[in-house]
View 1 (cartoon, rainbow, N blue to C red):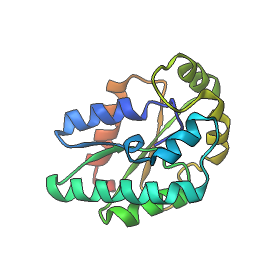
View 2: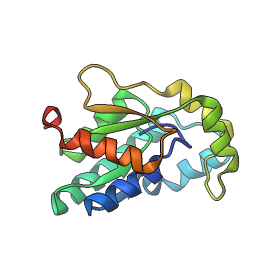
View 3: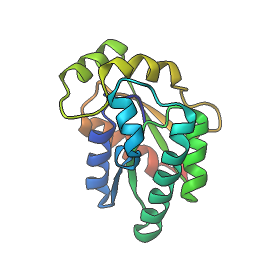
Length: 164
């Protein structure tokens, strides 16, 4: 989880590969209207996100039921979004927040090509982000680290005795 440009898709791909499980890209579950809205530089609101989170959560649940585990890349910016994903998936979820400085995120977004999310929406995402709190099954990671290091940190965390 994290804002655009934090490295969610890169980490999720590495984790899915290491775990030998399905990768679910949250961006693929947005409606055409949501994609068009973001592409036009307008932030999504909660009413835009609820159906997306329901579709994504259902996909996570289905993939997990079929294979035992799945990895998803999703912004999950608010606690209520994470709770919605949990309810829609009907499987235990764990979240890893990729966190880094706003200037680094902006740099990444400015150099990224072929994505509908413009760098101009970074501020709205950062304003919306609610860092995981007490009672949430979440790990906070330094997104400046390499994908290999991040992957190892997540695997150690999910395999640890305190996360079962």
